[in-house]
Image (cartoon, rainbow, N blue to C red; front, top):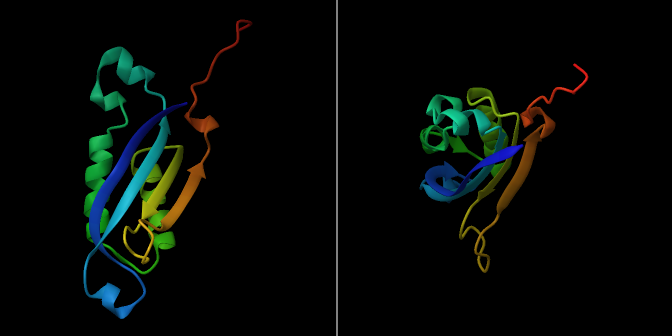
Length: 129
């Protein structure tokens, strides 16, 4: 399995359970690792055969900027489902952080892994076939 990744994608959104958090936008930071097979795109240099990280990032920016989640946990589940569904990603690891949300901590957040790593691996035929 190969990994296409996006690190430290910063997006402004409404996130949080407290009244003051519902009144102003805060920054969330995403790290996303997506399982894929890069060989078809590498062999042809055809972006249509690649997992287009730019398209994924633009979709997530639009989606998260327009959202108003209460919990990072809910945002993480929703983002993972969107990426897997819309970009045919069989496995991903996602970290979402809220920089500066807790005094004394640089960042707090959640990290999840969804899907199957083996589903992203190509099928290898045996020599007996």
